View 1 (cartoon, one colour):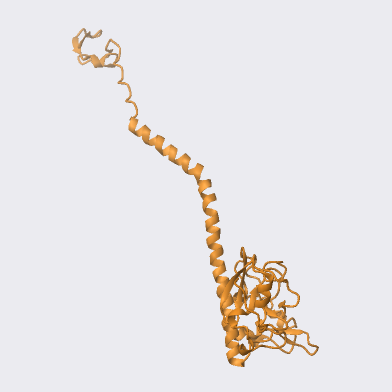
View 2 (tube, rainbow, N blue to C red):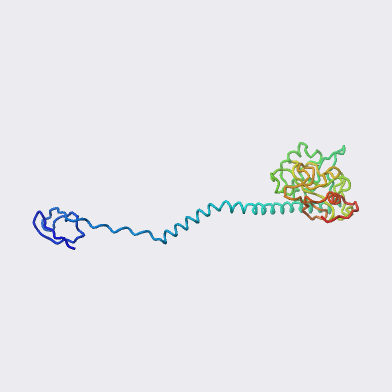
Length: 294
């Protein structure tokens, strides 16, 4: 309701709206400073926060906490699947490497009418040059082959300068150091094998069948340079897959077994559980024994 107010300076009486109570200002008549009596009107209370907005904030907070709380669990669940997929891809690349080697060996056979020997010997019969050097032109490595000097040993002054060159087809991508100038593929050599040490074999010599005879297999460890004339020796190697990972036996960095190249150019994965007698039959070219299921 209006407030009746008389100016103490000029005596003028006015009715003033109550919302001016407690306010100070000039008198409309005399201009002197006056204060309207009464208490100032209370400010309206603030409106409470919307319950809908609060609910949204709570839901967002719960989702954020849940994401970070469960993220570790989800990662732990997905990690094995990711690792398995990567290993599957590496194993496929390893298989492709062996297929390239098999194709190179068959092209060598087409050219020279025989597979290469495991090694070319020196005057004393000791290994001097590896079959892996001999097939370089058939692996699209002809320029490297031209740099190799067959008049000196594989580790001679000239050839040693080539020792650090990486040949992708000789490296399994599952190896711990896949960019080293080593090899993860060795020939099966020795009496009665395709790589009969200093002598090569012809396809017609493989009377047990090319699909039943292993030529090359994976090796894990051993730190064998790709030029080194070193391979599996059928007379001393363990007749088991992954018996050792020191370069002495068929082995791999793939779980559960190792990949092998057969004389027909096919690649198969042999389980750790392949029996010793079966493996022994698969390593020779003309023992006349039937191959059991494996």
